[in-house]
Length: 244
Length: 244
DNA sequence: CGCATACTTGAGCGTTCTCAATACAGGTGG
DNA sequence: CCACCTGTATTGAGAACGCTCAAGTATGCG
Image (cartoon, rainbow over all chains, first blue to last red; front, side, top):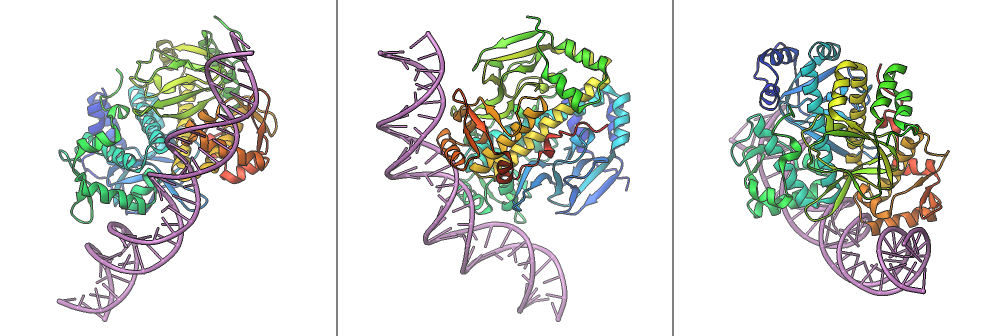
């Protein structure tokens, strides 16, 4: 399993950071070990002791917490180029599970090996830490949404965020993209029930913001309206890159 | 303003990490520059370019986002020993504001100087990064609460979390502590209105979970009940310390 | 004593949830 | 190629939770 598929993490790093060609190669080499994960399987389990990090190369995944009563909340939607579990490097155990939402390909990076690279390559360490802080900023933004925004705004905001992030790794067409999530999964992201998400989506379809795409997938159409509804500004995603 | 007040960050680091005495001294020396901040004043402003980090030495503060419509959401409640803005070290601008909720004392750590220490003292760098990841875990836990828990559970969970964190820096008595937050501030933490928080607190008082303390402060009394109500488990706070 | 701030309580409304029934699409096996 | 089965989407009705608006009451501070 030593894949040679295009690595979307490289795309992000080239665009957002000032790593040299050699440093990029070091990162790319760390991602040689590739594993396929079928939809709905776990990539990492809550509570386990992390021995490796996972870079999502293809497909969609999510970080999740399952509550005592069985309800589920996603704390991050992961797209190609995302590190599924950066904190595995530093924390003693996983605080969340990572689950594949579609069939996925993940690079499995050995933890000890990565720690080693940290010693030798301070720039790489800095970049990965930076990525963690961007994650942090995304979490903060979501807290604001979940705490203070109504249903329509939450969903619109989610769509805008995903669009922006997909663009960085060239996975969104201009003004539209396919969403491989079920309404239940959207609900578990934005803190609503699937029934209510359904009603909101109906309304959004009626207003021409989204429509049904191919293969039972939702297609996001009118970005500017969505941005208006959710007062979306991408600054928290730090798309302009690292502070040099 | 070169204070010599006991530094609660030291307490945390001694307890949770394996820094040597010399390393601890280095951190303590970084905190020599102390500034008093009156209640309701900003410690750091959203959107600004960070030039220093702030360690909360005394008082309570919070990270906040203000939304277009004027509503406010806190993403973290800060108590003595907390770093108000760790990501200031890595990100190009503040994604949130930090506001003093009571009169505060903060150590102002020069960013460039800290980056310098990062080079020379890898252990300190590791520890600060670890603290950032614990922050991250707290954000994730809050997302789950905001997305999936009802009012009573959210408030109870907040109280349990605060209790646990206060204990680490010796600021909670056994089974009780004083809360210097207004009901409005609690509301902006748990994503409710102050009116509804009031009603929930009434219920909690009636059930003997909390009572009115001195000086208009709320006093948290029955910890075990609160833990039951909110299914609180402190594992996400990583109170057992760093992975060695 | 008077002001400002926070807390308290009620009434009515709106958003979101629950429960439940139905429709639909895609995949599987006969 | 059809029949069936499963998971997802859709829709309705009613209830619950939390919000808004508004008035009134404490409390601390100057």
